Length: 359
Image (tube, rainbow, N blue to C red; front, side, top):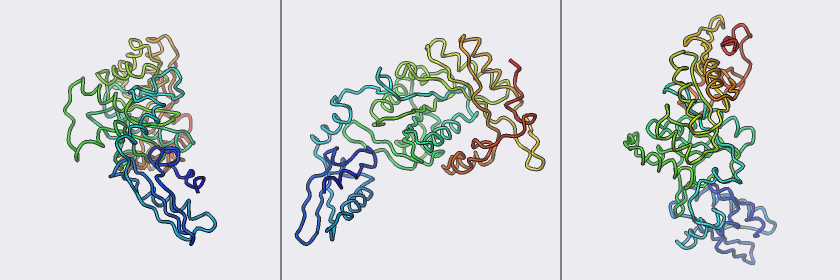
């Protein structure tokens, strides 16, 4: 019976309920009736129905079981403290796990010089694509004032708090946390710098992320408080710069990426978004925002940092990309064969990525 219950994971922590001390009691009647009492971490646990169903299904598969009765109880304060300490490896001290020497998580800070270049779209679709490939992925919506990741990723769940730990909701296999999950309606966040730093610190240290392969941080545009806080809290984070082909946007993006010189962070590369609009009638590429901006940013950052900064990709304008963001369905999942979703690109003479600076 315990082996069957060990196959049931807590939906938020993703570890067996037997390992988490969530099985309070098991009773087996002579008529094959099994009574299982399970501790919930909090009384308002949003996953109570899922846990009940999963426990019922696991036990019902055993030979001789005629009926399964699941009763839910709630952990005491002491039990929650023990659980939080266990999840943190035996210590209740708050620390950013991704900044520790033994961390195996790759952290990427997605940055831009100005707003409206599609930084959040890039973040969400990268996260969804990597999760679809089998990686364990998390996203921090670090754009406190302009948070948009929950909608774009389709994450409509609410975080659950266990003592001073926060269990993040998931969407498309990606764990995500955002200040938008804690504010009523569409209320604005009116905070000064120290509050922004504290919020980011809580997202990184107080959220139970588990063992992630990749953590993406969707930064606000520019080189303000959050960019500085990321460098302090997660100095090993690598910077991914997003720009459009427009020269004005490219100049500002280069400025944002140059912060790596002061923070001693690595720039992993540049993504050029909105790189041309395929004509719906003749497939000719219309350069709405010009050409070559991504390559100009990469060349400038290469000169500034002294290390090669490549152009990692060029994403064309695509209505499906916008629609997917509004509906919470990333285009890499709904239309993976489209150019914006990572599918075939136009011929080389029409590909915006092939028309940048010869440098």
